[in-house]
Image (cartoon, rainbow, N blue to C red; front, side):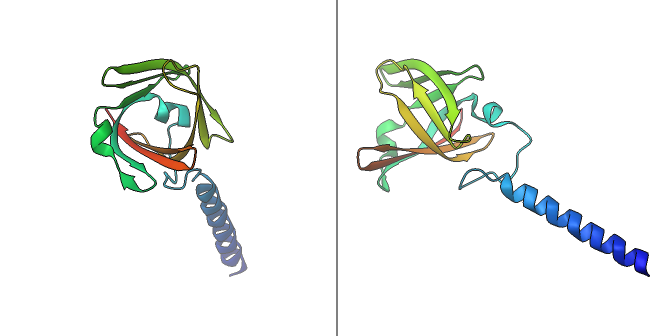
Length: 139
């Protein structure tokens, strides 16, 4: 009887450790809670805009052809109609943000990641007092 109790307590403690580990994997407010792919593997993709808001107001129709591409080796590019540029990206702040530097036709940007999944990438930037939120899907 005592050995069954010890085994039960050991299993309960192990389950508690597992749950704590999974909770700490949720780095971004909107997920994912857990992923087998690294953050770099998830962001390295070509993303097309699905939703764009400024201070909560929807402006998606104005940027419907906006696309961003991130490579595993740190290269970045964007295109929007006749505008395009290239630069470099890297994670910062414990991988909660992406810093984009040296982009032609665009100032340096700090992206605050909200969600980073294999087929979904959400972030926002602060532009003066405006919060610009971008929701992308895999192209």
